[in-house]
Length: 277
Image 1 (cartoon, rainbow, N blue to C red):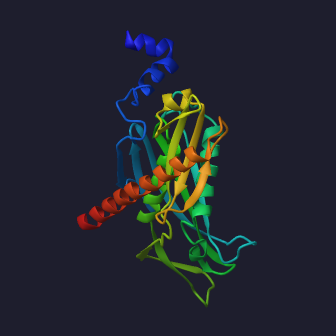
Image 2 (tube, helix red, strand yellow):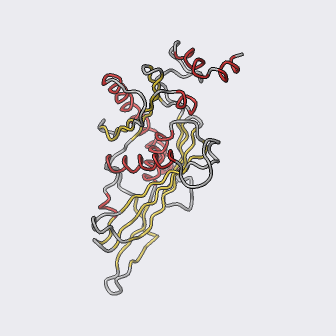
Image 3 (cartoon, helix red, strand yellow):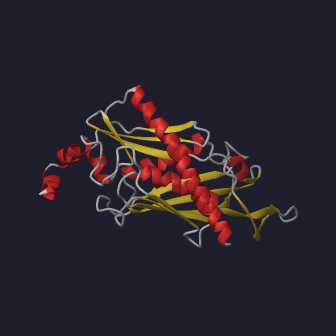
C-alpha cells in the first residue's frame, strides 16, 4: 500500500512524513546521511579521494602537469576542476558531452576554489612567466542519489590534501625543467571549505542533504559553503522559491556546524593513513 502511494503521489507521500518532522528514510529534517571518506584511492594519480554521502558516491583524481603560466598572471599556476556525471551513476544521465548539471557543478567547484582561497595559485608557479603547475581535478560520480555538490567539495578538499608534487628546478645551462620524483612535497592548503546543501518543500520546510527524489520534489535547492573560520565562501541557489533572511541564516548556521564535522573526518582519515605508513 505504502509503495503504491509513494509511486502515485510522491509529493503527498513525502508531506505525510514532513508533517511528523521526519523523512521517508528515517532521518530528521536537519540530519545528514552517514559520510565516509577514503584517500589515495587511485594509485596512478598525484592525489585522490573517494567520498560517500549516503548512496551518493564521488571519486576525485588529481593529475599535475607542467605548463606555461597564463599571460595575464605570469606568477600563478592553474587549477582546472571537471565534474563528470556518466550514465553509470544514474539513468537520468546520457552518454555524450557534459550535460547542464555537470557543467554547472564544474563551474560551482571552480567558483568555490577561487572564492575560498583554497590554494594560493602563486605557490604553483615554479619560475615566473616560464613554468608552473596545472592541477587537473577530475571528479566523477559513481552513484548519484542527490546532494552532488557537497560530495564534490569534500572529495576535492580531501584529494588536494592527499596530493604530492615532485620537486622541479630549471637547469640554468639548458633552460629545461628537471623533475625529481624522489623528492615530493604536499600542497599547502590555506582554507578548508565545506558545502552543505538544503532542499525547500512547499516554500517553507527546509531539509538538509536531500536525496535525488527529495531534490526532484522540492521547490528550491540551496548550497552554502563555509570555511573553518566560519566565513561564508559561496552560496549557490539555482532558481526556485525565495528564502527569508531568517531561513537563510539558519542554513548558514547549520553549514558552519557541518564544516566542523567534515574537517574532523578529513583530519582523522589523513592521520590514520600517515599512521598506517
